[in-house]
Amino acid sequence: MTAHQPRTRGRPPAADRAHVTAAALRLLDEEGLDALTMRKLASAVGVQVGTLYGYFPTKTALLTAMAEEMLSGCRAAADGIADPRERVLAFVRGLRTALLSYRDGARVYAGTHAIGPNTLGFAESLNGALRETGLDAAAAMKTALLVLHFATGHVLEEQAAIQAGPDLPVGVGRLREAIEDGDYPHLAEAQDHLTGADLTELFEQGLRLLTADLP
Amino acid sequence: MTAHQPRTRGRPPAADRAHVTAAALRLLDEEGLDALTMRKLASAVGVQVGTLYGYFPTKTALLTAMAEEMLSGCRAAADGIADPRERVLAFVRGLRTALLSYRDGARVYAGTHAIGPNTLGFAESLNGALRETGLDAAAAMKTALLVLHFATGHVLEEQAAIQAGPDLPVGVGRLREAIEDGDYPHLAEAQDHLTGADLTELFEQGLRLLTADLP
DNA sequence: ACCTGAACACCGTTCAAGT
DNA sequence: ACCTGAACACCGTTCAAGT
Image (cartoon, rainbow over the protein chains, first blue to last red):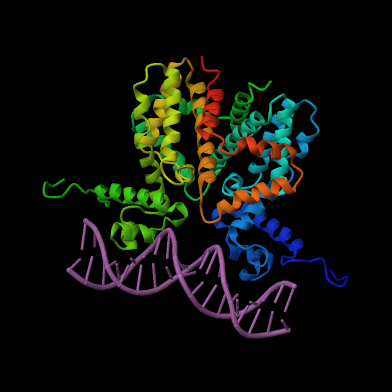
């Protein structure tokens, strides 16, 4: 109302919300989701723990803002593609890249339900591209959900496999051991073909199949 | 070695590991993953917290045992199907049903990497069915991973959508609001077609597409 | 209006001491 | 051999009091 007031209206100084979110994403990338603590984040920002609750009412709200921010760049590469079918593929690849570019990115994304402009804008663009291929509203939304679910699940497993975490290098050895100890002939044979499997190629295969019946 | 010794060899009384796992699954189903606490589990079992660490070295180990136990019944329905292609579909449907039958089942499954007989036996049977359709070892494993990733991602979202949790009914209203406030014409149109969407049908569509190129 | 400092009610995990 | 009881080092969250 008054001219003297700074541009804050409700509570949160919106400028620093972004700053805190960026610091949280940096911390996530360096230490992983399990080590992302409100206290560690506070000291990274240079503030007391309680202060964070002036920016975000809850840790879930922070994680949601992080998920929203993760998607900030994932439309750029696809938006200019003329062929709608190729645009659809580019959108989904962009989502995978966005999630892969932060440690535990898929876990954060799958654990939240952001409704910010990046998330909804992405869903809108993906739906738009699907409609342009000739699908009606219902079919476009179904295909969008399908590829989104697939991408989430795939990157989740990709990042779980990468994780050279606390005891995971042990974990993969244990898997090999368990397969050889037990009676799993198909798994034993497939294991060799699987070592160093190209996960990008696997993702592309899934994406191709899920979009195979596009008009 | 000696005949007097009871059949315990190392540390854990294996009989009660199963009992604790069952109690944990019961607690999970009643209260959800976020409320599954070692202390709550201890009091449900009628024991002190520290005692649980005689059965499981860590909470992660408990969750892994829970994931393994979840898959106990998911092969039964498919194992007798003669047509290999139909058997593949039945295995994946069985996995979805198994995960859906516990609250937060997919979150537990996706967050662990069980290597017990249920998990490996399921993977072995799925691979065997895929080989029988005519796929070679590498192709069978790739398709298996694909449908597994899809199923995980799909049920994860299914259970997140169901969750009439602490503030989620508010959450869906907020989504509708955000879509109508913003400039998302495709999402706004698709929203009506989506309400009460049949998630089982959507899962079947994804499954059909991912297995469409089977020989 | 914003931040500090301190507390509350929890966690997972460990380990002496009992029996 | 197994369990108890109590502690350790943390959590997320809240809130008076300061400025």
